[in-house]
Every structure is written in C-alpha cells, then in structure tokens.
Image 1 (cartoon, rainbow over the protein chains, first blue to last red):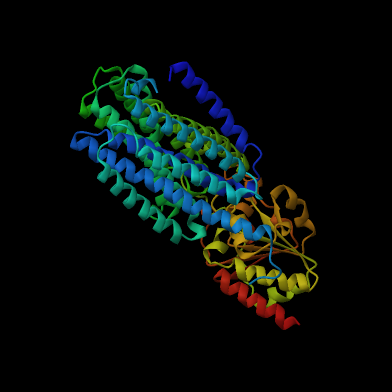
Image 2 (cartoon, one colour):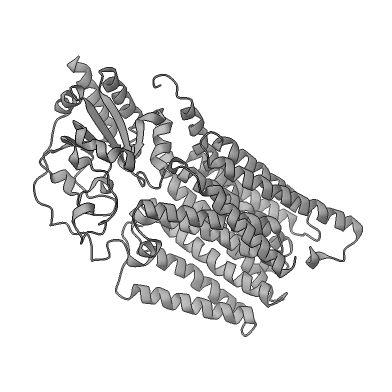
Amino acid sequence: MTGIVALYIFMLAAFTGYEVISRVPVILHTPLMSGSNFVHGIVLVGAMVALGAAHTPLEKAIGFVGVLLAAGNAVGGYVVTERMLEMFKSSGRPSKGSH
Amino acid sequence: MTALGGFGTGIASVQLLIQASYFVTAVLFIIGLKRMSSPVTARSGILWAGAGMLVATLVTFLYPGMTNYPLIGAAIVVGGGIAWWSGKRVAMTDMPQMIALYNGMGGGAAAAIAAVELYRGESPGLASSALAVIGGIIGSVSFGGSIIAFAKLQGLVKRSLRFPGQQLLNLLILAAAIGIGAAVALGIDATPSAVTAFFVLSIVLGVTMTLPIGGADMPVVISLYNALTGLAVGFEGFVLQNAAMIIAGTVVGSAGTLLTQLMAKAMNRSLGNVLFSGFGDTGGPATGEVKGSLKPIEATDVGVMLAFAQKVIIVPGYGMAVAQAQHKIWELCQLLIDRGVTVRFAIHPVAGRMPGHMNVLLAEAGVPYDLIADLDEINAEFENADAALIIGANDVVNPVARTDKSSPIYGMPILNADKAKNVIVIKRGQGAGFSGIENALFYLDNTRMLYGDAQKAAAELIQAIKAVG
C-alpha cells in the first residue's frame, strides 16, 4: 500500500468515525466508549503478527506481553460492553412494576 | 500487500483470504459502531463488532511465515481468560475504571508492537520507523495514564499529586521522549538502550500527566486515552501494513476524540483545562468558606413530606449506585406515584462516573425512560418542586459552581436543586464530594440531612410512607 493510499484510508476512516458518533444520545456515551474501546482491540491481530515474526528472546517476551494485553483489551471490552447493552434491551421494553 | 509480495501462488491466495477477511472485519466494525449509537439497535451492534473481531483473529493464524504459535495461543488464553473473568464479575458501578484498564492494555499492546519493530532495528524505511515511534509514544502514554486512571477510580491512589513546576517537568519528559524517539526513527541512535529509554520515558509521561488530574475529571481523561489508543493502533497498522488496524484504529481515534469533546462540553471545561490546569490547583479545597450548619432530619419526617408533596425530583449520584440503592429508590418512587405524586429523575451529564453511566444504573433497576430528564430539561422545574431528594450526589448540585469564582468547579453546569422548596440530602457521612469541595447546598436553610446508607435510608422512607397510609 503506497503512502498516498494510506493517507486516503486514514482520512476516510477519520470522517467515518466522526459521522458514526455524531448523533449519539448522552445515555449511550458510556456503552459507546466501551464499544469503541473493544474495537481498538483489533490491535490483537497486529500483536499476533509481531510475536509471530519475533526471533530473539527479547522480541518474543515483548511480543508475548503485547498479545496478552491485546487479548485482554478485546475480550474485556467485549464482555463489559455486552453486559451494559444487555440492560438497555430490558429497559427498552419496561416491565410493569419492579421486581 | 506490496511488502509481502514475491511468494508462491498458494501463499498469494492465503494473502487474498486474509485481506478479504480484514476488509469484512472493517465493515462489521463500522456497522457495529453505527448500531451502538442508537438505543434500539445498540445491543446487536456489539454482536456485529464481535463477529468482526473473531474473523480477524482466526484468519491471522494463517499469516504466511508465522512462528511461535504456542506462545501466541498461551498469551491469548491467559490474557483473554483473565479479562473474561474480570469483565463478567465487575459491578456496573465500577465500569468506568474497568474500561480504563482494558483501554490501557490496548495502548500497551500498540506500544509492544512498536517495541518489537524498533528493537529489531531492521528499519524498513524512515516513514515506517517514524510511525512506529509516534504510535509507540501515544500507546505508552495511554498505557501509563490509563493505569493511573484505573488506580484513582478504584481508590488505590487517593490523592492528586501536585507540586510546583509539575507542568514544566512533564514538558521536559515529553521533550526528552520526542528527542530520543526522533533519534531512534532517524537512525542516529537506534541502539536497544535508546529504544528502552524512549519507552520508559513515554510510560512515565502518561503517569505524571495523569497523577495531578482530579477524580471528577477522570471520565474525560479515560475517553481521551481511549481515542489515543485508537490512534496508536492506527499508526502501528501503517507500520505492519494492516488495513484492519488502520481503519479500526483511526475510526476509534476520531470517534473517541468527538466523544471526549462532548464530555468536556457537558462539564463546561475545555480539554486543555482538564489536562493542564489541574483540578483544584489552587492549593487544596477551600473548606472554611461555607457558612451555616448541617441540619439533620429523621426518615419518618421525610416520609410525611414526600407523601404529601405534589412534585418530587430525585437527583441520583454515584453514592446511590455504590450503595446499590437504585432498586429501593424505584420502589419508593412507585409508592409516591401511586399516591399521585409527580416524580422525576434529574440526571446530570456527569452523574455517576461518566456521561450515561447513571442511565445504565437506573435502567438496571427498571426505571422507565420517560421519568428520567437531563439537566436542560429539568432545571426550570426545580422551582415548582416541593422536594428535591439528593441521593449520593454532591458536586453536581453544589451552588458554588454558579457563585464562587474561586471554586475549582466554578462554571460547571449544575442541577438547581437548591431552588426546590425543600431539599433532602441522603448521605452516608459528613465528608466532602469526590472533588474534595465542601458543598454549600448542604448548609442552606431549606436543606435537611438524612444520614445513613442510601439503601437503608430508602427502606426507612418506604416504611414511613406506608405508615402515612
């Protein structure tokens, strides 16, 4: 991928992120922050590639920590976002009376 | 992928499969985020994004020339397992610091990618090295800063560390990190010790930048670090020529920046102000300035007052959530509604720990949306309210934000609870708020303090209202 194509991707992705969020109601700010936190968990694939190409013990150690942290970001981000949004479903159809 | 060209046709078709899968992942992420920005579709949004992550992770195992599979598998199982276990267990009230922690891990991972590339020292070109360094510093700052944000909200770090010349020191650390980073990128000094110094300085910068920031500003800071991690992931994506990382990282970087601005705006503070002024930098909270006394009241008296009120506005805060009182409070509200009392919930934009956090907690208790009003909607109604019931909220109802120019929270929009005919404050003890500022509302003539745990107090109020008959 050439530098200029990379720049185009960067620019278009930045506008996409801005547009996707621009009309979000305040009630969803926390889940959405959590959701976007999950999305940058994609760093996992990069960490996997880095560890997969590591040769020296130092590279392997850093790569291992990288994959460990990235997996934590992706899995943890998913679990907490899913838990939060789960409750929005139940309040979207409020049950009569409390429990 | 030009960088990996020249392989056989078998590898070329695997490459095509990987690239196609990353493309699908990017599309799934964007659709997922779009769906997460509306309450109706939000729940399916995370499923779409989750599917994208699964596709990308599985296909990455097919990457040509990969080694160290046992290490990769072990790291995913351990890291993912711990995160799964902690994510399932964490209480809703502790969500913000958990997000900070996971976000810090992502920043650390981005920095680790940069570190592997830079320690290897076989620079594939200036642009690549420069991007690795930029992503490295951003990821390291996000890593160090997020860990401190987590520690502060978790109560592991209680005080905000401030000393004269602190900003200057941070500036010096930043300059040193940039200087060494530039030397590494340009190949002037790309020795392992220079790379190590670069990463240590960057992480220290994240820590020292975050230490002076007060707990009340932490949501904005977490959101900022979330955006920074996205950006770091995007930059490392350029280094690795990985389109999924570039797109997902950049989307989060820009979306996170916008979200950070929205939050800062809700608190009437600029981002620069949050980061560099130091909340309450004037040398500790001004405690002695509030006049009057705290006037306690019994639950039975409050019960009578509420039962015969026409309109009651409830202002929930983080304290209510900590005491897990939202279910009892909702039960109390239903009793009042049955008696013909008009009940509304007033939500400050930063109630809880970050915007929308309180809505999550009330939704958990089953409070319908139409009873919940935000600051702009409700503020004019306090004048007509017979009682404002403050439960575990503090800074967001402190009238000094309107009047006292020397107060650190001056200018922050607040809920005008002091305008209600009676103000009842349910509070555990006599301590100051999360920001450490004394609350003038508690000392007003129309304010009464109901001391005790929020859940117990709510139960007593329910008994008192039932006793009225």
